[in-house]
Length: 288
Length: 150
Ligand SMILES: Nc1ncnc2c1ncn2[C@@H]1O[C@H](COP(=O)(O)OP(=O)(O)O)[C@@H](O)[C@H]1O
Ligand SMILES: [Mg+2]
Image (cartoon, rainbow over all chains, first blue to last red; front, side, top):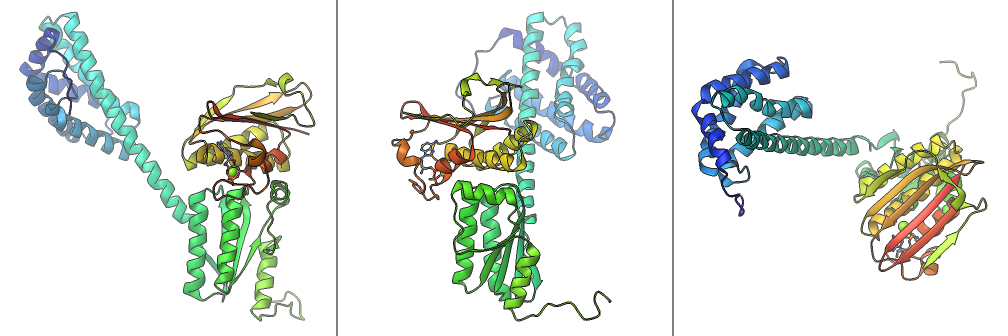
């Protein structure tokens, strides 16, 4: 893992031998302290197993690698810490609660180190080492959370782009929120695919829910409309609100030959008419 | 090279920041989305009309994407400004990319060196009240825009 190993520090040997000599006692203090801090949100058995594994791995690496967490001998310990942070992050523990489990080792060992009259310098070295463990744990925690956020946003991306069948042969996509390039692309692909798979001849892209149409969104819209036309379908853009219309005009975008309608209802009426449906109010009015 | 179009309201230098500026990195596509959201809330806070909010957000979206795509990434500083008579939103986009060789050409409607519509720079200039563009191969590109409440 590393090519630069710090020269061994004689301050390290004293705290390391204390940690190795009094394993059982320090471990049980550690479990106790960490348990208090987590206030029973984890079963005692689970915590004991986790910390037992960590301490075991620590005790194996310390004599070999000293206090250098980057050393290869600490590979297993790093993996265990990463596992611990991943499971904490998944269970909804805060970064603080996660790191505190590790930092509790300081408190747990303090009495023993004092009893063994370990020097202040050695205690500092021990404390720095535990800080390293804690920071490593936090970093892994953040990595896991970032990954989760990414996955969620990908799921949202999929969720928020439905193609809706309004009528036989008439599809609609309501665009909502902030459109980024990836989402617009996805919407467009979905729409074109659905046109084929359902054999529909009419598509309505409704942008009532879109906050802003910039040149990139406009370009995607234009491309989709053209692609739909090439496939023999007509495509109408509806829901262009006044502020969007003004902005699009100032930008200099020309929708040219593309059909636009103020509302989804109007766009649907046009598509129905073209499909040969007659929509009219019955003579009796709104009686059901 | 510099293009400085102080808008109808003029007096860009006289306006003072009213509140703490927010700086955001622009390095991935999702940053462009976030810049739009931040500009939107600043525009609401500065009491811009719905149309003016939308214009400022759209201009910011264009400039942020240019920073990302052509500038190779950069940052934006957004703040609310006050010139004694009105409030406004200011956004300053900076990158240390290759710069723009010919500003007049880049500001021509429909001109693009990539595959865009070529309306981002020229269009956002029309959408805002103040527009200043500074660019060189050494320093990269800086675009400063302000939209005032009416
Ligand atoms: N930050 C920048 N750095 C370098 N070149 C830029 C930058 N912003 C714009 N340009 C140049 O100006 C041209 C016009 O930009 P723009 O009007 O936004 O159109 P588009 O983004 O569609 O190309 C771009 O194609 C690019 O060559
Ligand atoms: Mg552009």
